[in-house]
Length: 258
Image (cartoon, rainbow, N blue to C red; front, side):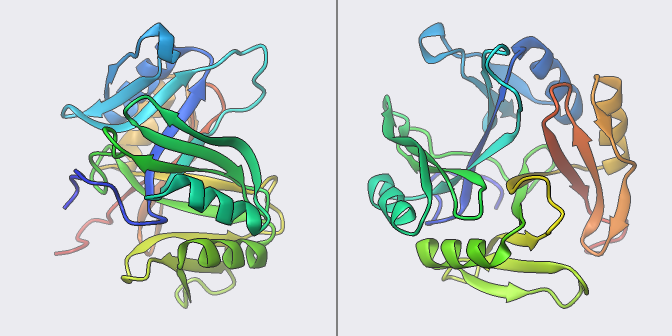
């Protein structure tokens, strides 16, 4: 099922948002690429804007001050049912606190940390807002993978905090890739060790129906993109929005699942 109506299990990527300096341009770009509609929030909440697909929340955009912002990226929040406890466990294992646990009205509670390998991530304990209400379908979040120069530290940290099991990938020879799986066996993401990575970061992959069409839409809307290429899991491309935030789109290969 792609619809989500309750809080996700511990450690599952459950919400994504993007800080940008120009909300109107961001809505135009992401509306063109994914067909999203938008619910702009009130001034008292910083115009935090919900991205909607068929009326369901799939992501958010938040205006930020261009004078004090030097980079833009999609933030990923991992689910927890006790943000204070999980945040404390992260810090005890070497994570740096960037935003201490705080309640967001009746929506839920959050914190933001930097893991021991240097990558930023958030925690989300849902209340009225459980996170992404649609996933794993075109126009929505499909997966998140961490690219880091210190995969050993990252694997130790996330498996200890969230109880993930770690599985290698034999179909990607020469790539330091590890699947992250919840205790129930469900795959929630992966860790890629890359000594050449500019900075450790969680990446975001959106599912699309047609990767080539998504590339064309992104370019027409003011972004840049690599040409789509095939891999064993589908046809993918890397897209950079007008502000420099990068994400990946992926579509099933023709005939997949037939």
